[in-house]
Length: 248
Image (cartoon, rainbow, N blue to C red):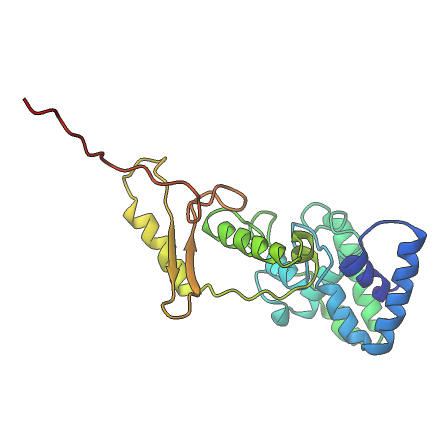
């Protein structure tokens, strides 16, 4: 399959193997090739594929493997990501270093052959340091940030956008969460509840007056998919109840 066909399968059709799906794949691929440049289609493709270690899309992969945005990758680092596209697990630098290095050199030779990289530059290239497995929290949805992602996924689902599309569709999702406000909220919850019982539930939502924009969201400590105490539909138990005694 061409890159265009791979993108169409990932973004629109899924992995089903039928004649009708293959026909749709070909028709959509031809239409995309006519209307968009190869560069644009390649960008979309890289934003939908899996790079291993829980990273979908090139930006997530750059953060996961090198702790930097894709725009700041070196040639050597970009070649590492490109070398794993075919089989991310088989070419993981930590799990299979020899296979990863061999594939990396193969990618560099291909870049030289296509005229994208000078032979002298490729000869000077050294395999870059890669973050160890588990060091990146880019795809870690535990803790407070997991609740934010959960709310985003639910809101998008209400508009017909599935969780699979969120992960693999190359979408750019913008929320109203303010990073500084969120960090302050998390720090405040940790500070205020010091010494409190471990099972005491916590929640905080900061809403911007006038616009209703949610600037900070703390639904608890557990993370994605766990009970969200910021929106739980249960009445909190009172600390005390009024009582009366009969008069004599």
